[in-house]
Image (cartoon, rainbow, N blue to C red):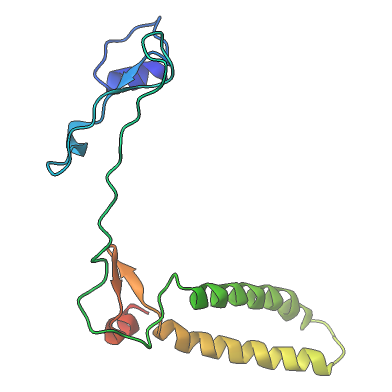
Length: 154
């Protein structure tokens, strides 16, 4: 509620307060010594301000988000295009398994197409086991590409 927000900002409780005229300030713990202080800004339009002032957000430094290891060309990035396509294929295989496995409880006539699909799905799951061992992962925001660490994590 508005009164809770006012108390969190250290403002006195005011039953006649308006949301559009309330001034918000960032917490002191959010201030960074390397960046300049962000001025208070006003939410919404007031009579004094024609345009809402906006604070700027410091972009995180992503230049060193991987471990200092040699280039691992055989390790897949967890958010890469191949891994994304693989995950979509995995979703299709799970959907197929959800539909076909319960049908095996009944007498389903044998079909060459179903037999081929069963073999392809089984091969896919075996390949998924190998690909999981070759896919990096994030540990506390750092991309891990070490094969022994990936194997232990898996």
